[in-house]
Each structure stands twice: as C-alpha cells, then as structure tokens.
Amino acid sequence: MNNSKTTQEIEKTSKGYIKFNHAEEGKINLCSGRSGFNSLFAMGALELTTKLSKSGEEVHYAYETDKQGLDELIGKSGEVLTNIQEAMTAISIIMTDQENENIKQNTPELAWLLLGLNELSATTSDNLERMNRTMNSCKHI
Image: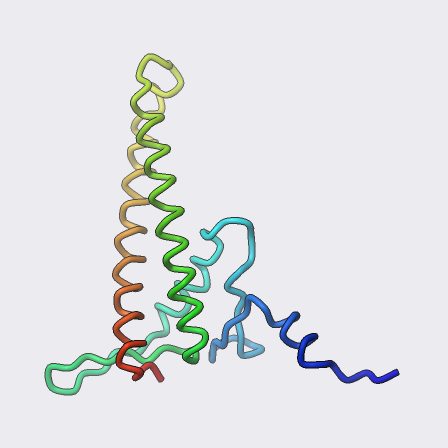
C-alpha cells in the first residue's frame, strides 16, 4: 500500500483553504461554519495584513495571499454581503411589530445590531471593491 497522497486527496484536504503568508501552515480556512459570517475572520486577517503603497497617483494593495486566494476571498465577500443584507431585512421587518412587547422592549438593541450590520456591510463592500481593482490590475503580490 502506497502512503503518498494523490492529487485528489490533497485537493480534498485543502479545499476551503487559501494561502495566507502569516499563518503557521501558510494557509487559512475560508469555509468553516454554516454561514458566510465565519469567513469574516479570514477576511479580516487578510485586510489587516494588506500593505498599501503609492506610485504617484496610483495606489497598490499587496495581499498576503495568491491570486487564487484573492479570487476565493472576492467570492466569499459577495456571499457575506448577501447574508448581511438578508439579516438587515429580517431585523427591519421584526422591528416593525411594535405591538409585540418583547420586540418593543428590545428595539434599542435591535437598532444597534442593525447599525453594526450596516457598518460591517460598508467595510466589506469597500474591501471587495479594493480586491476587485487589485485583481483587475493583477498587482496583488
């Protein structure tokens, strides 16, 4: 019996991972959990380690991943934005039921949650736009 892994086995075990230069094993899991919100940790790690440089009027972003990782991150960012928008819609609908005493009592907390989701959406959207520009210019590393 041969102990070496086949290409399919390697792909199967690395599925959901993207290259990340600062990780112990050189990769991080982008697909853990059942919702897109779990991807926020990996997205945040890449955002915090992104290096900005300027050349005249041109701005360049160097990500601590490769082109495939950036492409995966762009796709996950779109999923996260969809999840955020759906959550905001659900909370907004719930908040309209002011006849329900539990909802009425918790309206301030729901409003703060809505504000936080809105800020998360704006940050994710800005990062997504930056990553798309980087991919289009192919100057990400």
